[in-house]
Image 1: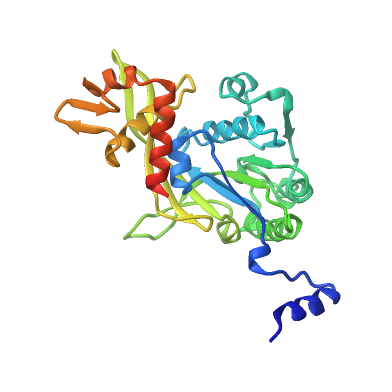
Image 2: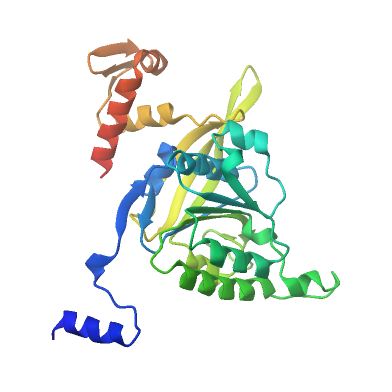
Length: 314
């Protein structure tokens, strides 16, 4: 069968038919957070069809902080960004500290879930990144107009199913990034296995290319004062790369994300930095204690270490 001839005939009839090698893919964009890029298998995909990512987990696990960091990176690349502030909790000062240019960030405040769906279906055609914080707080119009004692079983999930279909259709051959921040829910009746899941219905779970779970790990204290947490990232679904990658990163309450510490331990893991007892060595530098070696490494050496790690990972 002549596939090119078949393609032409089908396209003449108004169908959208192409060969797999015609799908545009401009690689992956780094988020600026090594741990996040690692669990994403190299960064955020810029492939045709877009990258639809869910950040989900308990409250105060740095989901919004990571999303704002991603916005800052996109803006540095000259990309247009939108923030859907469904929780009405956006703090411009905090976002600015995390690297966001708030003068160049479009904010959306949809009144209902349906209005949100219509807005996003339009915007995915023309912007590069949309962050939704958070999807579960958007209220269906029918629920808004009912008394609180009137049940609305699975109403949001049914509307989300419609919204996802509209967004699929609107994206077409564009490559927008969508980050949906979501809350955790417990599945009823689960005796074995993990009962935790995210909210919004099954249509949303299928809609996401990638799902990343955020969990707080060990607290970081100095002189009995808590200054941050180790955040554990776990990729439980990835259709834009290898799934089931895990990594931890130290995040501080002042907004600092310790990429260097992550780099250091990954460099040991891949043999780029050698460890013998309490001694650490890289490129002729040898120090007793990781903090001493980390302090001696230059910016150029850190860059080379990161390049070597990505070569090993890929």
